[in-house]
Image (cartoon, rainbow, N blue to C red; front, side, top):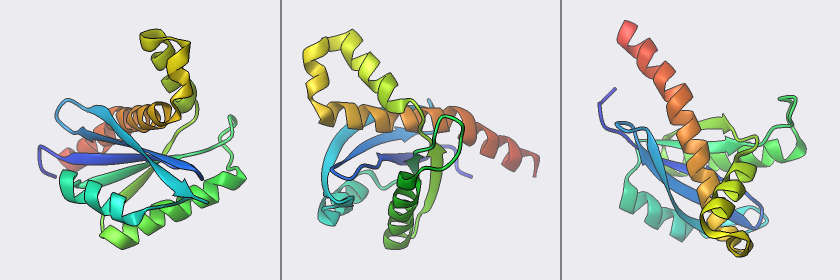
Amino acid sequence: MTCYQTFLSFDFGMKSIGVATGQSITRTAYPLQALKAQSGVPDWNQVDSIFYEWQPTHIVVGLPLNMDGSEQPFTKKTSFFAQCINTRYSITVYLHDERLSTIAARAEIFKRRGSAALLQKDCVDALSAAIILESWLENSYYQMQKISESS
């Protein structure tokens, strides 16, 4: 595994899909944008442009789960979206628990910019994607490094 890796993260939704980028050295993520979607299908040309610009080595997609960790009906739709990304770009896609990411994003936006900013759903979705990615980088990526270093 190389030292520096670039990641993209998606917070999947039926009307909007938040997108963030991050990297492995600082394990930080930055919200990029929210893509409009129709019934969960984004404009794939926009996704192509994001992939071309950022050239990610891995993808993280937030996996919606119930608070008890069980799957919900939306979990399957998100998994299908992740599979579409994997197939279209031949890239490793990780699903990561996204419980409470939107609540955390809304709280952060409220703290920084007040309640009026919460009406900008695009900001919430993109920040949620960044929160999902940072959580994955702090947890799963560290575990991957630990396993690969011991091999």
